Image (tube, rainbow, N blue to C red; front, side):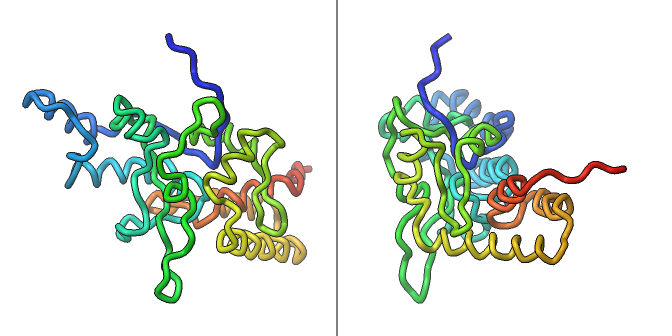
Length: 229
């Protein structure tokens, strides 16, 4: 077995088995004596693959945790953590596929790129942060009250924050607004456990609210729920 490349992880994805639609499509291509290529993945097989990735990530961008709407096709994309141009053998590998948010529009202007759009074809095999499993990723990053992401002091964490532009002002404002809201709820006497549970809940579409990962981690850092008497 080949040794894994060095690295740590970001927001994360609870990777499951390869989607049936993707596996069947690849098998069909090979049966027709066609080499499966990502550029040829279209229609229902692509849509079903997106749905599977959406479920693994509970409807959030694998990097920043923003909500993803599968109907907004120009605001998300299938992300190849290891770029297709450099790792053609992984262009259809399920473990290399994730959903990332895309450019946002504000007053008719595209916002500065973040996440997969900012990362583009970057990959450093010796210093990177892989998106799975999420429970490992989240231990390496914390959120300050001003909404900024902070790493654990490692070169890998700091580099990923920069590469993905995770401290872009638009993102920090959204996170700080959420943290301010959570602080207000706690000051009002809201149950810590209840708040955590509300952000852990998954909707009928399989999604959590935007930045649920930020809320859960921030709340867990506020202390533990009191044990029942």
